[in-house]
Length: 261
Image (tube, rainbow, N blue to C red; front, side):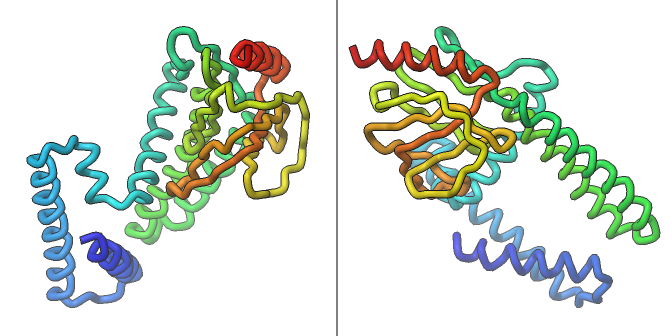
């Protein structure tokens, strides 16, 4: 079933491009494509119900049917949309009772607003240029509007998902794709270390904001920081940034000292 899905999606994309380009598609081909999509959804629905009858939860059943990369991409987009709602409502996720939040989105705000504005101007320009091609105009308009929402969602996710320090762990986050829990007893050293250049290296996680990080954490054991599509990424050095980096440094140093003693 999974391989059928991988084969069907590119075929549907090719058909969509042909239709937008005005290429005539024989009715039997369109009929077969629609029947294949309907059959695939029906088969997945039946498989989902069978897994539920075996006692699996809805999440576990969906995990058996939908590939992990697809689940992660959908989850990422849903978190962006949820972050937009939280941003508008001014309800950031501060980690619950007993947790201390440290925002980190301030230094990227101007850049992200500028990027969203450029996308908005591009949306207006493309809407004017493609006014004579209604089908292409509709598709490009949807993509352009989504790009604007995506840019705002990235900033909203960073603004509503601050770093969170609890009694036993530091939860570091960035946008909607990074959320790593670092136990305090695995932190060997904390340094207030402003850096503006970061080269990719194995075993390191650099969560730069506005191209800068201000704190460096050295760990005694690897912590997994999964990539966007779920690939494992063990790290032992974590660099991050906070709006008030010195306050985070002091609070984290105290917490690490208490956990050791």
